Amino acid sequence: MEIFTIGFTQSTAERFFGRLKQAGLRQLLDIRLNNRSQLAGFAKQDDLKFFLGSICGMEYRHEPLLAPTQEILDAYKKNGGQWSVYEEQFLALMRERQVETKLTPQDFAQPTVLLCSEATADHCHRRLVVEYLQQHWPEVKGVHL
Image 1 (cartoon, rainbow, N blue to C red):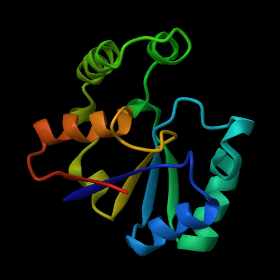
Image 2: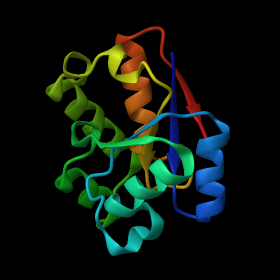
Image 3: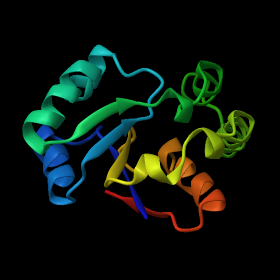
Image 4: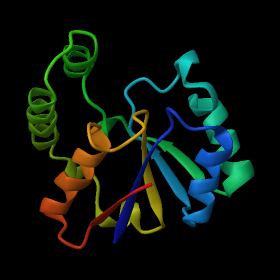
């Protein structure tokens, strides 16, 4: 089972929605903690839901279970924390939340993409979510758009 990931920063709306449509995705799980920011532009929650349905025929779902806490996010983003510390704290949070028992592979039965803001998956929690799920569901393969 493939779980796709995508970020919206440094992307035009045309390129963003084009990649989703080309990949044949049917569901977007928004795993951002803050999905209503005016800075998100076309990826602001209500607008995104509309665009996904209209342009791509996709469903939208916000999944805060897969988002970092405000404290973890602030320590990394606002206070210039190290990625290795963020990664360690976020993975500990996933274990504490027991994500693998609250979600099931069935939640990803239709082609699904995880959304966050970062342009690439290298230093983004969406990659960590996929890697975490791979440890518990061996059939998972991550595809970063």
